[in-house]
Length: 441
Image (cartoon, rainbow, N blue to C red; front, top):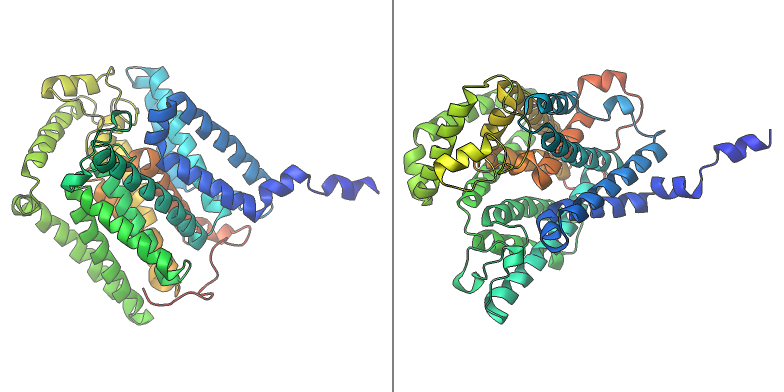
């Protein structure tokens, strides 16, 4: 009998993996690795990056095992995510290169797993704070490298893709590879920094520096999508604030009205896309994208249901990507639209599953944020709005940090609103309702 307590006592490794301090450090490591993927691959190579991700997955599995008593495995992963990942791996069997396709799926699965681990060991405020710290560091590094390249040595840093154009006020890329990627990250960072400010989770001086840093880099990126993202997020934040300040008995009719207005607004924006594009000064860019999308539709007609197989970022030597780039005389690494990319690679089935994952996460997180008193719950729906709007112009949401954020938000949304809530096995690991946090958005 004396051996029983000794066997049930946690080992030092288990205690370490289950500790809050380790969860915090692990979250920093995952976010820093995935958001800095481009720089890591350029400096140390793709094998190094893949090794880091694999090691983080092994550690993440250990963290989940060590916390198995406090985690509800029934609610571990959203069903929509499981079905989408299953369809992705099924597409390996009809892709042009099953080995390459399976490798791409493994990376997609690995990043999703990292997001699931973070979603279960950190609550919403802790996740936002960790992301804020990571993006503050990466954006500061980006600004420093741009100043070094464009002002101090006045020489492009080709190995990082930095053109050194900061002296002429952009466009700049930072350590993210392209100006659109930098602009996308800057908008995510601004949302996070403003949530930090509203929750008073960082010092006012640091908060002011962060917002100015994010705003400056977003402007210097000179990305047309930044304007659209900023407008969409600002509008979403305003509408969410209106809903949160509406009496509970009036929220349902207001939510229904908002849904109708959004649908009509999207229809009007599509009809008036010409003047809007001219106003943004992106007509040439859109003409190139439209030509690409038209050609993609031509390839989709051959495999409308199942698509051509999952690869994530385009592999230039594989069909149909090499065919598209050959006819367009371009070197695209994606469809420049997440929805068209899913349609091309996974067919209409994949597009429906992707829309189900993102749509369910947005609706759940929106309803949750409209009813909770703490402002931190607005972070998830605003990040999702950013992801879904940016998906119209880029495919970042399908891989790398975009995919990480989508899965993370889906996990967070599923923890509070899911059909599996009736089978709850344990407590929801989230911020206590309104505990010391501002009520206003």
